[in-house]
Amino acid sequence: MKTFSHSSTSGAQLGTLTVEQGCPDLDLVGRSGCSRPAKALWFDRSKFVFLNFMVEDSKDVRVDIQEDKLIFSCKSADDTDIYNEIHFFDKVQPKDSRERRYDRTINVLLRKMKENVAWPRMTKDTGKPIWLAVDFDNWRDWETEEEEGMAEYEKYLDPDDRGVVNDIPVLRVTRQGADALHFVTSPLPEGCEAHMKVDWERRFDHMQQHSAPSSTSRLRLPEWSEEVPFIVHPNVLPHDLPAALLGVAEVLIQGSRIVQAPNRVDLPSSSPSALMQIRELGRQRSVIELDTPGLKPEQLEFLERTVNEKIRASVPVNVREVSVDDPLVEQVRSRGLPDDHAGPIRIIEIEGIDSNMCCGTHVSNLSHLQAIKILGVEKGKKNKSNLIFIAGNRILQYTDKCFSVEKALNSLLKTGPEEHVEAVDKIQKSVKMLQKSNLNLLRDLAVLTAQAFKSDPKRGKLFTLHRKDGDNEFMNIIANEIGTEETLIFLTVGDEKAAGLFLLAGPVEMVESLGPRVSEMLEGKGAGKNGRYQGRANRMSRRSEVTALLQESLELHSQQEE
Image (cartoon, rainbow, N blue to C red; front, side):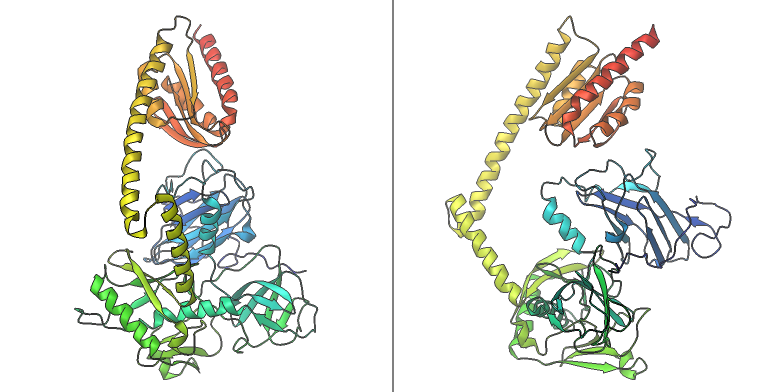
């Protein structure tokens, strides 16, 4: 069985030379000249690590993902060469990793070789490059990681068709030039007839969500003197598609017969039976980027009403295929063609509403959308906003879900839907009062704990304490009360069999030396200064090992002083 493996944007293997600003001429990115590193942010998940390079209007992007390192290069908007090289903290799976180019960033998703193991840092070495920082806005605990992690992963994939080829399940479909690549669970014998069956429920859902944004693309809104363009907001550029899926056979759908290899099928990509690319439209709801900071409620109401009127009018949706040199190509709305485009161009026309280039699958008329429901508007990029909507069968699914939630809240809150907000508000206020009371008790307990230690004539130079229901403030109060000039303090809070928080405080030199080692032993991540090192620990069960290390260090320090 032939496996289709991951390749970088360019497919080229780059060098391993690290270059700093002000370097001599070196051929690092396919040309001579100096390069500088791009600023990068990263955050951790249970199955993935996310790395985002902050480069606006990047060109010639190359991402080489290997098991133990990543090499990134591109050109910035002003033609400056960008080069970054990162040796990973732990190994990743290159074939199941992805990269995506956006207008302002290049985002990389790395699939961990060891799942559910936290990365305390991005790099193998403890020294952090000045251009690399933690993305604290996206850092979170892993309690809901299973669902959210997969949602993050799917942002790097484009919605595509599913189905079977000769009763063999199709796991993924993507495009390579004029060909549609199908990933299946087992190879097909060379020379056999290829019979395809599409998952119509999935296809029709994509058709509805894909056609819905176009139906709003040139509507005039009240109090606006000009048309406001609605831009479908994909998670990736429309033609920047993923290249691989680990552990499955590659099937190239080009025709109705397999002629080249045991897992290749020949079929023209323009054939109506070929499975087509669809933009990312969200798992449950879709987003349109608006070139305006926001919309007024009356404008949203007008937009929703007008679009649904067009749906009820069964406005036709026509598809035309023209050559690249056809004058019509210059007259329709477009983001441009991909570099590897081949064959005719598809133009989608919704009569009286919009005409644009699109390779996605659309409905034949707007009545197939059934309805569009605008859920609201959220703040987007600078001077832009995101319109959230659902269409077609997703409205029915959303209604079912909302009703199920409503029934559950009725039972939990012992009130009707009209009183849900008021009931939740009362509960939140009660919780805040209890939290405040609990916090005051913890503060008092911290002070008493420290005083008990200080009043013990047999106290040593090491103080350790673990408490399940504490926090950072609790630990810092104890450290402040005891004093860290002569005492080494190791405190932890949280579940002993799971993750929690830790604090190491004491003489500055000892804390600077021991802090990173403590964090590594607890399989956590942390930082510190001025005699304090604190962070998150994922292996609280190793507290006894840390205590032994600290005791040994104190004894060695005492011997050196003598």
